[in-house]
Length: 79
Image (cartoon, rainbow, N blue to C red; front, side, top):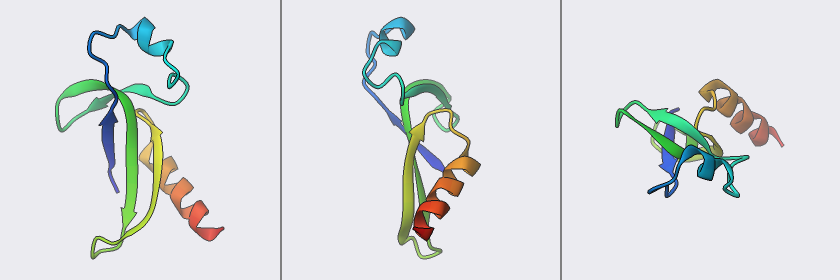
């Protein structure tokens, strides 16, 4: 499982402006290693079978720990 970054529009945004955004409680600044850059947004965590069939998903802040996201997906599957 890997959290794919979902950057939100941030052209010309300062950190203070982003923190006043309606998404400030949910979106965060995070680092995308595959693009070697920081971004303002969310991460999509998708759990799939070995054949690529989606089993569960969760949307988290950019800094969320993937272990916690996996735990959230697995506990939601039990309900």
